[in-house]
Image 1 (cartoon, rainbow over the protein chains, first blue to last red):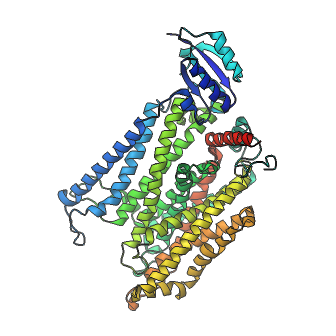
Image 2: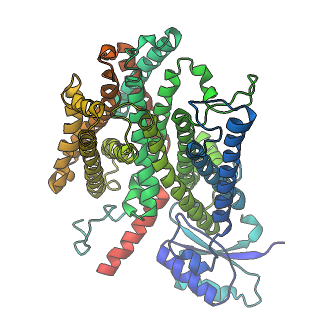
Length: 177
Length: 457
């Protein structure tokens, strides 16, 4: 498939915000936006939904870590080889709290980051297919799919330019990530 | 500031820098050859590291009898250094995680270096308990692992075991938090680099980051979650460190005020260390446009706040000791202030309580040289705080017949110097190879300020 896309390149975050709102209002499909920093409010303009899976992964794996650890502490100190330490009860639950907490934070934190890498398909050695080189420095790139029947290249180009696009490129989608 | 008189607060980023200029400013020190100042600093730090390495090699080979400890004062220099370094790390997490959750935009210029400081400080801290074990190659015994002795498991009721878990977790979470923050910046450098080693390395570590906004959105979520976890973690770490003392029945240690007192002290000392580092870095690396007087002013205010909490804790400790009617507690508290280690106690009081009061004055807070001197003195004072807590509580215990004194040996002093060497060597290398300021975040703040300025005009 060689769907074509139109890439509008902008220099200012206000331009990218306004153009995104306008493009969506006109009903075109935004493939993605590339930006050097997280522009505040752009997710709403793009109509992206809040990532809901990451908080759940964080919560559930944190819970799992805590549960596994508390079971392990109970099993080692009270069941596998109980040792009398200063006459304390075999199952000293309050004394298990600090390590359980630490392991919970460790599981939640590490798994959130790993999940983020997996969901975003980031891994060492991945070749970054940047739309234009400046997108990690000072350029914002709006990528619109040309698949819609209503897509009118000349009009869209004019729309992008009206909102301050410094450059508009058309190319095949497969050359993009 | 002069260009925009209409805004109420001075800008966080001076000069109307474009996004490309910000990238250029931050990347410039990495591309330049290191200057004479950097080399002087690096050689000094590396010499200290060498001295420390030699001292550690000697004491590991000979045994910790090379220290000045005795049967009465069983913990002294080593644990002082450990608590000191762990405390330093805490301000990094405060700036990177807690101030992120509170949406304090000024943090963006200093969070990267503060997080690096946390990592290096925790590395230095971890060194000391390891040496204290006497046989550091058996350090892994502190963690539960299946073994051929039973399995004989570790004692999960011991605060020292809690410590090992807390500090390892703290290091790992700080590391991934720092790396996550670096990710977009690594991609920026990758895209600026020509072919060659730099491009390959940064290409590898930037994981193919391409600035996609869908990724940015998830990134923000992951970052916020991690910030929330790190906030809870940082409070727990120094709380657990304080339990090393508070769960013992030694007068002067056995006190419920220890956790909040230690956490506040940790942030206080770390803030001072951040100021020390940042004041030097902005000067040496010409980053005065990005790390402005406003940043130093704000951190000065945080120092005042934490100093006040620490002062309140000192007061509470003395009051509770006298009010408790426990003769041992009363003695321990008086012995701190007027005993043989009174000099250390009063150094602590003057550096941590009296001198920071100068920061109430805006004139002092915006005078970089003055803030630098104050921050150095706080570093000294906070080191002495741990020394006072540990040594004065131990050296005169319940039985006057077992009273003893303590004086560090050359080996112990050399180890402390070595830890400073390790810290500064790591920090100076970090300044050369990675962006010391979070570029992506600063750009967001710069854009926000530009918009704000536009509204006011």
